[in-house]
Length: 459
Image 1 (cartoon, one colour):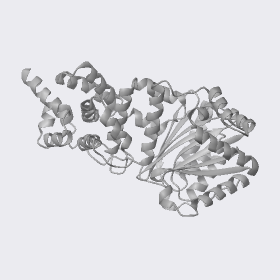
Image 2 (cartoon, helix red, strand yellow; image 1 turned 180 degrees about the vertical axis):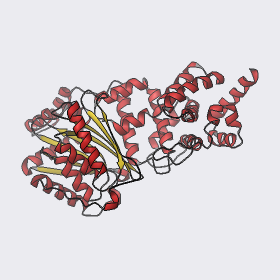
Image 3 (spheres, rainbow, N blue to C red; image 1 turned 135 degrees about the vertical axis):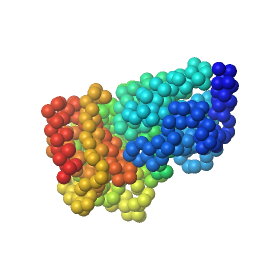
């Protein structure tokens, strides 16, 4: 017992050092780490067949620890916020321990978060950790995929989603910790898995949850509208009509500056029938904003046009106003890669043309694009949200896939409220929040929509 206590003490000192990764790597290669923590030793050279993962479980874990440790001194552009969080975290050693143990459940098989949590109890007892550290490690191991799952699959403009995540993390320290662990875990999947787009989603979720926990996330709709109207010298009446028509989730999470930009686009659309704006951001991400009268198949035509232009769509937000106006915000991740001097003018004029003239899009698909080596699946979730039906589609990616999916929804009279599009290594994982007449899909429509989606994916 005294020997175990002494070993545990020295092991915990390693977690507080400046050479965590190098020391654990040496311990692993010599077999010491696996003997000291047999639960981790069971991961040696373990291959788990999961999409996107290219490392064995033990290697992935050590690389995740390395990536977290490197944040202390990183000069990589885009990691500045994470670096500042690492420097301010109270117990970084707890995060290293959580990462070391986060995948121990994979030695058992499925449901590795729950299985890992069960095995963790024995480890923290042997290490004689104090209650605060024990609680935080257990929280992080049990929930280490929670933040990425919410960021990648749920609508971050929905206050209920932010409240759900805030309730799960509990406090600001847990929020910072799970954000850092999520980065470490995702960045160690493969060299290309951590992208600017995923970073922006996680940052958005982090910032909104931070505001929620601080009690300052939501300004009442009436107060925000009144404040912005008073800031205008003209067009106060038109602005009031505009904001009154838009849904609450749009007003809650749209910044004042963007709201004013959208109002100007709205006024332009009243004159022309449709108006388009491109907001280019850093790291090659851009948002294409379309304001027009809502018409059947509008989203389908928009994504079809953007697909023809070789733009990689990663997210779509659709805000339908009470007066028939709609604002569609489509994010693309490869703007910088395909950019040329006339691209923005080409996108604006082309989208305005297809919206105003309701032109059908014809996408050519090569024969070899129809089938892939991965089985497609369609999953319906009618429980997670009170407002939306969530439909997840996992399929081999191909030209026009998003267009074909949106056409199925259009033909079934199903409205897409938001879309999260994720494409990696030729695989598409798309999650849609949908409604029928402002409500979730009923059982009959759900089954018919699933059937048509399956037929589309298989043909």
